[in-house]
Length: 269
Image (cartoon, rainbow, N blue to C red):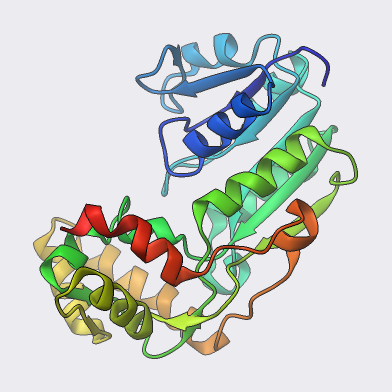
């Protein structure tokens, strides 16, 4: 990529800020973009797009949950000189019917430059930086996933794979399954967190309880019920299976969930 900067979208988020930091530590020029950062980028404001991509040679591409990745933006980035794109995607998007991410993958794969897709399992950081932090503090996590295990992955490991794909050779045209080293149910994850924080964290998989909580939080009932359908698709798939892509790409094993919980404990105090 030479001296051209690497554009990192979502640079204040869980993965983006880690990607930007790791690139900087390794001496790469970084253009860290976000809605409120020095380099402003907003999916809802196309006037911010050109300034973000102009002159960049590679890009870490992501959008917040529910926000589609606009093909027009990817086309603009390629026209302005981006020659390598790493897309943050998710596991099981076909089974869950996640058209937003399916469309994003199609856009990137057809954009005409080197691409890599990161299909990540549930982030560890959902529990301390994301939508579950208040649930952990309250001692009750409600998700309709029964006892099905997920291969929870640390955002540090996602960032390490992303940086390798952004800066190294041999990653073009690859879809990486980015997972942690073990599969845990949400109940087991709650037990791990409870031992660390010193108070019980209960897991409730009842779909009606989930819908009630989501509606009480302001989500329309139809949206909450649609989410239950997506979770049912995950349950039908069965347990997640840890893979070895983190080890193969980065040269080190992914971080265990128990280590993450110890580091994250101050967020739940």
